Amino acid sequence: MNAVHECASLSRADSEKYTRVTLSGMLCAFAMLVLGFALQISNGFLNVKALIGVTISIILSAAALACPRVVLLVAFSKPAVIRRTFVVLLVVYLSAGIVGLRFHHPPIDVTIMENDSVHALLHGVDPYERNTTHQDLYTPQQAIYGPGLEVNGRVKVGFPYPPLTLLWILPGYFLGDVRYSFLIAVVLTAAIVFYIEPGLNGLVAAMLLLFIPNTPYILSYGWTEPLMVMTLAATVLAARRAPRLLPLALGLFFASKQYSFLAVPLAAMLLPRFSWKAYLSLLVRAVAVAALVTVPFFLWDPQGFWWSLVGFRLATPLRLDALSFSALLAVHGFHVIPQWGVMLAVIAAVSFALRKAPKTPAGFAASLGLVSLTFFVLNIAGFCNYYFFCAGALCLGVSGAPCDSGEKLFAIFKISQSATVAPESIGPVREPTAIF
Image (cartoon, rainbow, N blue to C red; front, side, top):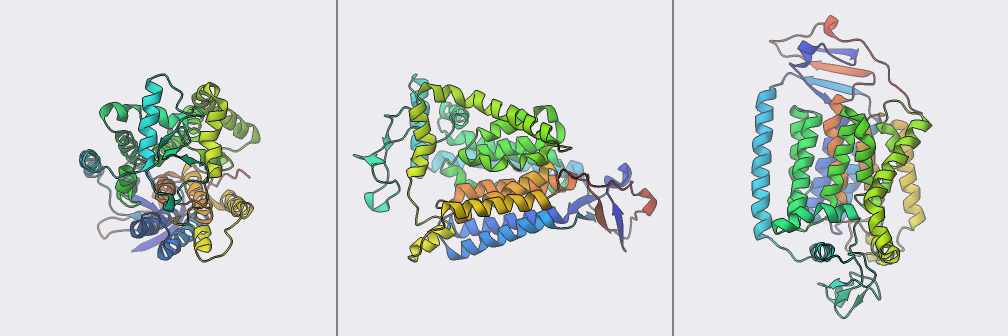
């Protein structure tokens, strides 16, 4: 027997018997699955089928933001079993991850730069210093770096990531492998995802994060996106459970990597009620937190810091092996998509998200997933680590969606033969709160 009711909540007794599965959460999960498949078949390198997969993921992400607020109630809820399953899964994953990293060391410039920079910092040397160089692992034919960026087998750049990353990898360095820090970041992110929704939705979302977007591959190469996803998860959690800590979490997210600026216009969704005063106050406090972590390293050598984090990135040429439409066009002899075209597409994605997405923390995360996917699939550099961040943002859309009951929901009750839900047990309707 099925019944359709306009509702936003169940009575406490009934809510404990059912798992709420939202349409938006399901679409985020499908988008993540398709994106994960694209990364599995390509490892984040140029592949036409993978590009099609990324495009489909963008469409599904947009549908997740614009779809009706529909909820399917599944007659399954065993909290104790789900919690035990999650704990066992996390312990096994952590143990397997340590073993995997212990015996698998693929050569990549990322880990060389990370180890060199931590070693310099511990010896009182500025890791962003303008004369810093690192070993170049690649041949001239591979053309990884731009003209003049590599001299005599050395890459002329300091630590190419923000200081928060440098501080985060210190424990891993002391434990013998900087990649351990990113493994911990993934495990902590999975724990946050599950804590946001400690039920079947949280378990599914955590499993998607741990396995679907080629996560072991990301960890083996020491890419820094796990830290970025962890700070994003902390931001969503703070917005839901501890609003006073929101500026701190959002500030750490801003300090985690250069392209975190994509979240600035979407941060309004993190507020329970939008006002320009509250929005600007949140941004100012978050930027202050980011500055507190970042500015001391900037003052050490401003020119070297700017070159390592910004100038070096701008001087890096188009990678013909990137999983992006710009690389595809270049390979076939066409002009790449200009940067103004990329930014127009990003602005369009931001505008779409602000108009259509639910104004909730989960809506913020899913919107950031859509905007980031648009940014990378059109740009000159889109690789597995960047798309891992997009997948992590969509994962938070899966986990947080069932909690976002602040809007009017059209609930589809799937009722087993042994249980029924009476209409009078449905809670009162709550109208959506508009921020624009």
